[in-house]
View: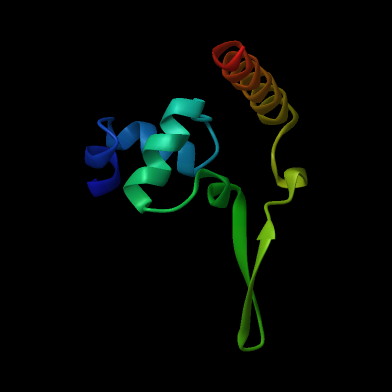
Length: 88
């Protein structure tokens, strides 16, 4: 609930993101990262415990459904295009 409040969105939307039914926009990714006080790219990493050493590894895209991969790719391409347009 606190994360949803900090991101100015509903708890159900955050829940849908958590279970993989929705993928956040680049703007929402920034809001979530800001609320968590981390860099946005860290949202795509997972911590793996091996013995006593915790490592940070990229999330394996194989755990995403094909439609989620497609949506992610389209949104990332659109975000990159928007960023490039703002620079040029």
